[in-house]
Image (cartoon, rainbow, N blue to C red; front, side):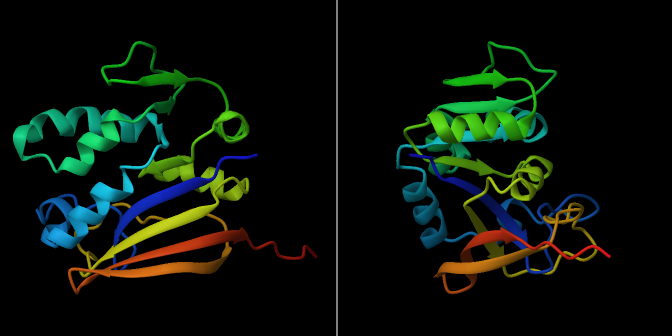
Length: 195
């Protein structure tokens, strides 16, 4: 049996995954609420394996210690999960409780993980990694949490920029705190006839 793989991403309504300078929205664009935080906590309670690209993993390694006791509990659950970091530059051991580095081609690595894992796989962020995995047909679900903001001036990383074309089958929807939408889709790569 093949493990499922979920690409889990936060975005503004206009499709930006981050909220960098010149604006300083704060975490979650300042729109988190108790229902959202509890839902994230429960999402990360299940047995699963995290998969990160090197850039996102490095960002988490820098960001999480700076949060100290102010860190949201779901992040602690995420850190405690077994984790695979796909990187050609990092080496074991990593400063992370249960993480290991997998070198080589990301598509081959995730294909192998899907075949061998007895728990679902999940990736939070890691945009370029997940675009490649979607194009290879390895992403079973895209879980998009849409925050009620437009970050046209301050957004610096469009979630799907450079990705292929995909048909999306809506699997579930949820409204959190009366304002934030979680949409879960099954992606299918759209291929176009060549002339």
